[in-house]
Amino acid sequence: MPDMEDTQVGTATRAARPETVFDWVDAEAARREAAGLTRRLRSRTPEDDLLDLASNDYLGLTRHPAVTAAAAEAALRWGGGSTGSRLVTGTTEGHTELERELAEFCGYQAALVFSSGYTANLAVLTALAGPDTLIVSDAHNHASLIDGCRLAKGQVARAAHCDPRSVRAALAARTLPRALVVTDSVFSVDGNAAPLTEHLAAAREFGAALVLDDAHGLGVLGPGGAGAGAASGIAGQPDVVATATLSKSLGAQGGVVLGPERVIRHLVSAARTFIFDTGLNPAAVGAALGALRLLRAEPGRAADALRVARELSTRLAEHGLDTTAPDGAVVSVRADDPEHAVRWAAACRDEGLAVGCFRPPSVPDGVPRLRLTARADLTADQIAFAVGVVVKTR
Ligand SMILES: Cc1ncc(COP(=O)(O)O)c(C=O)c1O
Figure: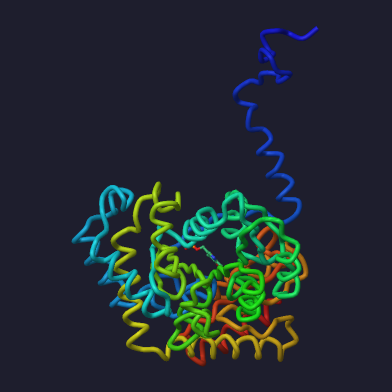
């Protein structure tokens, strides 16, 4: 006989004591721990003596005096925040300049900045893929694109990784009138590049648009770091939209969507992560503008990042480590299992080298890896040190 006081009226749910409601969280934590998948926060100080190859600061600009000065100046002028959605509190001259200069540099008609690359991706997918749209999404796409697919009202087809034939097959089978093909330009785990021109050709055959997430291409690929869209000659095409983050090569924070003017205008009225999110922070606007101007003044930085990546990967491979030749500034080294990856990254840290540790669910193929960021400003000695530590601690 159920105790009626313990039973929610109209459902079979039994009431629980408040302190037991989150017991399931502990059970999940135990399961994660057993699988070597617990994530832990670490404290960080501004002056540690680690060589940092874990961050996404590909061009070493985050702490560049021109970047920090531009951030500070913008914060002093506009305050610690942008005080509301830009549709409510307005667009500063910094937002306008940043959007104009990003569009010009990357080769698109127009740009719109967001509070992060994540929200930029959610914006594009939710505002461009309604119930009448098929989204063809690469199997290795970044989590923010996957979440955009989940939030969008369109249908989603998963295409085999970097496979234009699979994209074509999904488009050919579609029953909906519109379609978007969505891919990272450079994949964050292995640093391999998507076949963008082939994807665009496939999209065009079926009247679809191409969306590329150029988070890892901006600042590294293309003329002076203008991105993978510029590198492959598809930037600025009427059926191409790109997204990027300002938090990697540009050493700031925030995101951007680049594309035809009419698409950018559409996002202002239709993208919920633009409409209902506080506008990009003034300090981030200043930092991104400062970094972009530096990059334009010193275009060799992009090539340096690629050179360092190739050198790191070649030297690691010479020592028998399982690494792929990168197309961008990301170098990954396979580990045996998640626990090995965690132990290996910790051993590197003990030796003075910070590296990324990628485990499920951050790896699309389930293979755990160490990830090294090839910073443009690394010296020959630092490269030798990094290789030595990764090899020694394997
Ligand atoms: C491919 C890709 N897209 C989007 C993002 C998200 O950018 P943000 O960190 O600015 O939200 C990242 C960042 O990790 C990324 O690697």
